[in-house]
Image 1 (cartoon, rainbow, N blue to C red):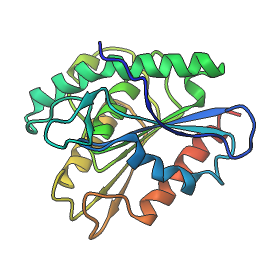
Image 2 (cartoon, rainbow, N blue to C red; image 1 turned 60 degrees about the vertical axis):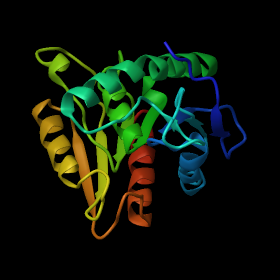
Image 3 (spheres, rainbow, N blue to C red; image 1 turned 135 degrees about the horizontal axis):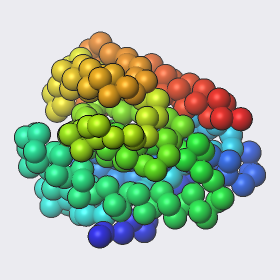
Length: 220
């Protein structure tokens, strides 16, 4: 299993020990340094949160400076399902290590993904031993859920945000994920960003912040 050992972080603005962890999972060919840019926009609402944006364990061969959770060669459902399953153990181990390090539980954890990172956030979030406080997926997809059929599994509240002009992952992926999550009994909220491409706009950023802050507040 590949191990996540590095990345970028932002300590709690309050200066206190972390009371929550917001784990930011970047997209294909990117890095933690890219997604940590969300954190300053969220700190006022989450002053006690530690933001962690690890680099995926694999270097991305197609983009020299970037990383990948797995080698993304296409969008065939079977390949996506196998890819997320192969990358999940490294993220689970990282989460376990950080929760133990700070004496926190899944109720103090939010998973936030972008694109390929959304695939990972949803995959891991639905399969943790306990439900995280929240899972947010920007511009991503839900991969295979056949292994969850007929099982009790973690059902964290999910927010999906996607742009209508996304040329990388089509907006249809949001509607498909929403339908499947509801079928599985997961509480899911969605926001469609009109005219937005493969990125996060200010409205999506604000909705994500409020979703995480609300989720953490419910656990106090």
